[in-house]
Image (cartoon, rainbow, N blue to C red):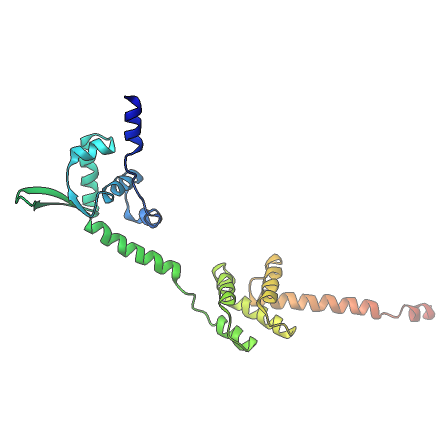
Amino acid sequence: MKNEKLLQLMKQKNIVIPLYLLQIHPKLKITMDEFVFLMYLTNQGDVFLFNPNKIAQEYHIALPQVLNYISVLTEKHLLRVEVRKNDKQIMEEYVNLEDFYHKVSLLLTEYMNSQDQEIESNVFELIEQEFGRTLSPMEYEIIKAWLENGTSEELITEALKEATFNGVSNLRYIDKILYEWGKKGIKTKDDVLRHQTKYKQEKQEKKEVFDYDWFEEHDDE
């Protein structure tokens, strides 16, 4: 007997929750318990006969809790309970989830637009001009990643100038420059100029040390 109940329990249908609904569910402004209950309802169909006693039995909660969930979701405009005539022309209550799907459609469109939004930047065109060719899809994604990670167009432009000055026309070299600048805390064009000025000064000082005529000083003594 126990084995039969166990088998029946294991054979009960699952509640399917699409991943995209998990991603946008906070914007529905309902609790996780209310969200899971709503997912249970969506698995019943778009429009179905409202049988609160059956829902309470299947969902293993008390009838007042079922009615409370229905009330909250109705107030949130995520479902409607409508009175319709069945095939026998008898008036019955039905749960209609049309409002839920409409709201999800709007939220999903908003979510996808935010994910797919292209970064408008002149840096792509500038790099193509310097390279003298069209960027490959992979190169485009690398530049896009720089921008998305907070690297300014100004800094990318300076790195491009550095690469061009050294006669190198590939993104790996520019990426290496940006990486080294990042380690040194260089974030703006002014930072680049200060770094270059400091480098030139240190190089000049080293040159002056090596150019010093030690023998001439010894002879004067």
